[in-house]
Length: 401
Ligand SMILES: C[S@@+](CC[C@H](N)C(=O)[O-])C[C@H]1O[C@@H](n2cnc3c(N)ncnc32)[C@H](O)[C@@H]1O
Image (cartoon, rainbow, N blue to C red):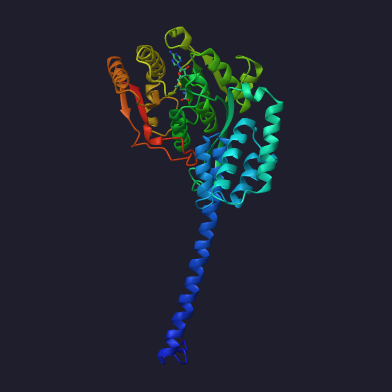
């Protein structure tokens, strides 16, 4: 039998026991809080680094730097920027103009708030300034190299699961729409990475692919074939270079490399106005994708026509294999016999243009369902303060039977 605590009948002994255990509890709570604070600090610094590599606007990078310093850009945060973002160990492709701008803004803010500015920051700034003035091509550059890092949906946003390296136009408003990265492609990419089973082992065909981010994500989740298209010749050149940068491009169609590596990304010129049945002859996609492609009412009828052809062509194959359809009732199943589906992410900037798309889709017997909330993707780019996820709508489009 268990012996009673010898003095437990005395009130002061009971109080002491209680105070020892409450002290232990307090200590362990303090340790947990300290651990949480360290983890939070690490996450804030990770976000700062990823924002820098994604070439987020300087104001966004500065906001993250301030947050990581608890309200100001402390020497600790400055050191981190030096070692992990702008410095030699940072990795990635250094953009001199961008790094100089960030350093200048950080130094100015730290000086103004009378925080200490570490010497290394001045030295780094000086080095960037002199290499900038020695190399006039920096001033002419109209492209910027971005690294878009998606945080893991399964690891509490602490680990990077995929990095897409992309050359993009510096200014999305100066022509070159196909060489800029638009918010809808970020949203569509989050969707692909959040629901990989929808895309795994599927033939995926994208319209208006621009810089090709969606293609990198489709390849990552194991699509059996990825075809990226665009109607802008300069966008195709840039897209191919981007796919090469991510080790995904096949230089020549039909080349040995393409035959050996089926799971690679193809980039094709396709204008919706010019596209004919024969252009799409070989394409029987399981899935059609598009990001930020509904913005010009003049293009809408052509876009709808191409969507219809792609969904119908795939559909024919589905009908031929109707006997296998029972196996494929699960939305996430990977069988190639399901009816084709299009996923279009879009920012509704002009309601009339969107209504025009909706009406043209209904006339073409296409069903358009808004799945933004019902199949919401995880937030995998929390460090991108410039990215307003709430502005993007996700549409699921199928051919009405
Ligand atoms: C706003 S950008 C979106 C690019 C990319 N999907 C993204 O979200 O980052 C629209 C893209 O559609 C392409 N596009 C526009 N009209 C087109 C047309 N009529 N035929 C083919 N592509 C077109 C543009 O060249 C451009 O790459």
